[in-house]
Image (cartoon, rainbow, N blue to C red):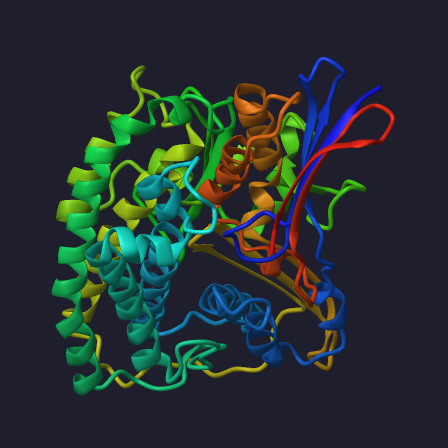
Length: 476
């Protein structure tokens, strides 16, 4: 008879989830599953609403990445309007998306993952958090908080609010950028770049210490899925879909986002409220792929900004065989590269001579009954797909969330880590923290994939074949 280890909830991620490890009598791992325990309802309760409400509604999916939903939703609405937004409006949207990358990646790296990296996987869980980081390295913690603040402040300057701004609208943006606001954002960027470069250098020096984790944290073969520019470079706001396999061979290239249903299918399982997107031509579950910063850097030919291209070249040396960087542990490395790129690109766009152009919105009524908007959120490719009736009311919605794209890979990753570290005959907090940590590599945003309320304590129980509790750990 088998035994089960349950880790609930997974800590230092956005939202509530549970991991279950099924053990044989010998203590070896037989199965591992990542359960999203929140119920998702956005796709249904948006039905019947006017399509122009969708950006504000879907941005409420999450308080961490509302900008990502705001942009993907408005791109879907642009498609419904059948308009091409003004060039300056596109640049302004890009700047906000890049600011979102900075703040979200900084949150993931400094607040959620640095406690493991700085304090150790087996350190006291009572101190293994951002407050422990503040005590151990006040300067690093301060820089992390400041870097996120720079991203959030740029969003606030552009959109009027740090969280749930309504500045991005169907057809463009609601207000042109003033010289004062431009200069206020530009003034912060050198400081942000300095912090990002210093953190990148520090992290590079730390990477050799994590050789064992790197070799076991999500290294199984997957494909990589992201947007790229028409020239094959790094892209976050717009672009075309590229898929590479685990050996770096291009499987799909220059696929228009409007054609995503040809290549992306969605499966469901009875143990989680999160869907399982997969690559349709290979079927489910063989069509496993990953999205997010690791996939974007693996797929891009170049970044296109000076220091980020140097960092990208160093990133590629992480894989000995010259192929794509496969370990999920290196999502941390990729986030730091993208922070540098985002700040460099924000600076370039803000210095564009047309950035203050007052023509920032194309106006029209609904001219199509179906609209698709795709962009890159911090966690990966985000898709909004709407259908409307003759009155402009939503009849159908599909949200393919970045975290969902990684669902198959996250389940595969926890099995790999559990096989490497979990001794089913005796519980140690550090080994279970490593199982959680592979999920933190992906920085899942579970409120985007589902919804719930309340608070759950963490309880881990090890039961024998008869159901008797032989060991128990709890974390309030």
